[in-house]
Amino acid sequence: MAKLKKTARKKTAASGAGSKAHADHLSKSLSESAQQIWLAGVGAFARAQAEGGKLFEGLVKEGLNLEQTARKIAGNRADVVRDAVESRVGQARERAVDTWDRLEKVFEDRVQRALVKLGVPSREDLADLVQRVDALNAELRRVGGSPTRRTATAATKAAKAPRKRATKKATRKQPVV
Image (cartoon, rainbow, N blue to C red; front, side, top):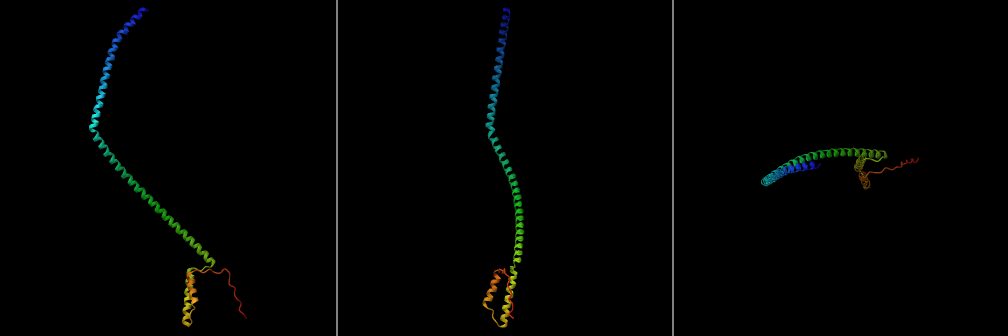
């Protein structure tokens, strides 16, 4: 067993000299690679300093162009949307006005029918009555009498304000025989 130990020591000593050379070679190559990477970084930095201002200005110009294009597109779309909304609002307004007019007409018709059922004279009826009173006054003047002031005033008031019709029927008096 002692022989085995001696040979293992000899092999380890021989391989130790080769690994040291290999480690030196690897260390040298790593140093060279690190030096090249450092020099490449310094070169990139110098180029970025030299061309960085130009590149920055170019990027700013491109950004401005893109912004202007985007604003134009957004403005055009906003105009289209605004026109569409205004059109819809106009249509809705027209429908509302038409509906309101129809509702008003229905209401007026119903009120007129109710007034007719109650026997309330209309404006036309009052205008006809005023014309008849005026004609009677003219006939009285022609015949020689003068219409009383109360009659003329009453006719004018009747034409201006609608009269309420009495709800009770007038009873006829029997002639005295």
